[in-house]
Length: 351
Ligand code: BDR
Ligand code: CA
Picture: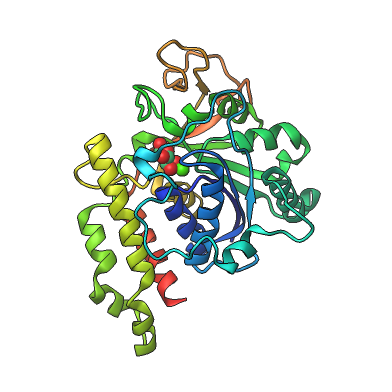
C-alpha cells in the first residue's frame, strides 16, 4: 500500500484522479489539498469535497485549502475547458450546501491550510525515518507544492517522490509551447523541479494518448459489463448507477470542450488520472531521466518546460538543482491504463 497526498484543482480530469486515488486498491489517500487553477479557489475546494463524497471516500479524508493565486503572476482560470465553476455540465454531485460537504471542508479548531496539512500527514507517516514515506501528487499548478518545499525543507526526506501532471516535450496547450499547469505558475514549478526529491513528470505527450473514446464511454454505461462484475442482485441494483451517470456527464462535457477548443474528435485526454495511475501501476509507463527546467522569461515561451533530451547541461546524480532532476514519462500502456480506470469505476459501484 502506498500512502499518497493529492494536490489538485478539480477540474474534470482532476475529478478522475480523485476517483482513482479513492479506489486504486494499492494506494491509501491521506488527504486532498486544493490550489487555484481551472476555476476560482472557492469553486475548486467545493469541487474537491463534492468529488470525494460522490466517490464514497472515507469521511476522514478532508479537503485543505491552499494558494488562491500563483507566487508572482496574475491568476488565470480555464472556463473554456472546465466551465465557470470548474465542473461544468456535471450532474449528480452532492450540492455545495450538503452538510457532508461542509464536514469535508471543516476542521476542528479552525481552518488548516494545505501546506500545514501536507506537513502533518508526512510527519505522521514518516515518523522521522522509522515510518513510511508519502508520494505527493500534483494535478494542478504547483504553487502549494513550491510553498511546502520552501517552508518545510526538513520534511523533504519524508517525500517518496513528487508525481506531477504538467509540461511537455515540445508541445503546449495554453500557449504554443506551454502546458496549463506550468503556465499558471512557472516560478512555482521551477522551485519544485529544483527540490532535492525524485520527480516524475507526466507530460502532454503522454496524456494525449489517454483518450477517453466513445468506446470507453459505451463501456462506462454498458450494463452487461456491470452484470459481469456484480455478484448478486442487490449489487446489480446498486450498479444501475448514479456514479456512472455522473461520470458520463463529466466526461461528456470534457469531450465537448476538448472538441470545440482543440479539435479532439476522438475524445478528451484525461490527463490528471495518469498521476495516480503512475503511483498505482508504474509499469504502465516507460520513463527516462532528464534535466527539466521551466522557461521563466521567454518573450514567446514563458512557461515552457525545457527537457534536456540531448544532455546539453552538465548534471550530477542528484534530483535537485544540479542534477538530472526528473523522470519524464514517455509512453503509456493505454489499454492497461483504461483497465485500471474501469476497475476503479467498478469498485466505486460495488462499495
Ligand atoms: C491540465 O490543465 C488542466 O486543465 C487539467 O486539469 C490538467 O491538469 C492539462 O494541461
Ligand atoms: Ca488539473
